[in-house]
Structures are given as C-alpha cells and as structure tokens.
Length: 218
Image 1 (tube, one colour):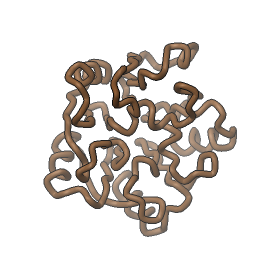
Image 2 (spheres, helix red, strand yellow):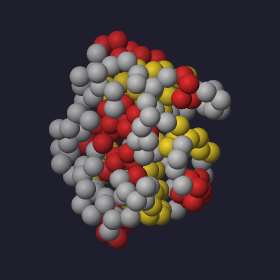
Image 3 (cartoon, one colour):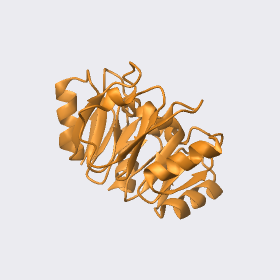
Image 4 (cartoon, one colour):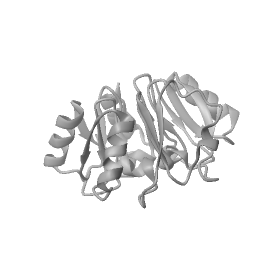
C-alpha cells in the first residue's frame, strides 16, 4: 500500500517520524488521525516521544530489530514506560547529534556519516548489531537524508554515482535505484516513510514519482 501524507502540514514526513517493520516513533503531539493513518498503512505499533523538546523525531534517532540509537541530547526519561520490543537503547553523545540524518540501517548493515568518531562507530555497531560502514550517498555525508530502504529495495538521490549505487547494493544486499519525492526533492529520507508493509510519501509527490517509489519498495 502506498499513500500520501502530511505531518503538521509538512510534506517532509521523514523528519517527524522514524519507522521499521513492526514499530514507528512519532512526536507525542501528532494528530490522532495522522497516527492512525501511519499505523494502518505501515502495519506498525506506534509510540509518541519527544527528544530534547523537539518533535523532529525522524532526525533524532534510528533503529532496527536489534537496537535504537538516539541523540545524546535525549535521556531515558523520554523513553520511560515504552515497550521497545526488547531492543537495546543507546544515547549517542557525539557532535553529530542529528542521528536520523547521519545513519541509515537495516537488520543487515548500517551506513553512517564518515565523520563519526571510532568510539561512536563501535557503539552504533554494538547497539544495532550490524556491520557499520562509513561512506557518503550522492556525495552527501548526511546519508539518512538522501536515502530510504526497506527489506525489498533502496531508493537514493539521483545524484548518487554508479559506484555508490553498487556499493550500497553490496552492503545491504538490495536492489538500489535513484528517484525523487515531493515534486523533485533529492532529500527522499525526509520525504518518505517505508517498511515491508507499506509506503507513505509527502503530499507533493507526483504520480511519476509515486510509480518509481512503489516499484522499488513493493
């Protein structure tokens, strides 16, 4: 299922939410109608959180089946009382604190901003339980902002090189294609929420973009 959505009247839905196959983190103050649409389309349970008083949840954390890496600006209090499905929870204190922009992960591997420290790289690998690779996507270090994946495929910015596309396909063992969302935006990580059950895109996404997005993730 693919569906258009806005969050707080913004088409850049990926900055407000972070999803995986079974779960989604959303802002605590998200409208109920929006929350239900996310649950229905992606077939997930949802939890409302606030990270350091911010609602931009998609930029502040990343997770897979094994663990959750959250900006060190947050604390355990932000996640108290939540059922995290047995996942490890780690608060990463690094100058690169927009975790969701700087990491993209699956249950197989993670790609991270090249400037993460060695200690941060190890903590990310230990928390997510996957091999971690430092690299860029489309020459951009904030890899989470220009790529989206599920267990069927990966979509990256049209500016990604053939070498980067092959590298990502080898890392994640997925077909990788280029595309845009929200009427030509290269920042597809900020524009799309996808897992194995469904796809949500910003309202400005065109029919041509929808076709390409549906093709890679369905």
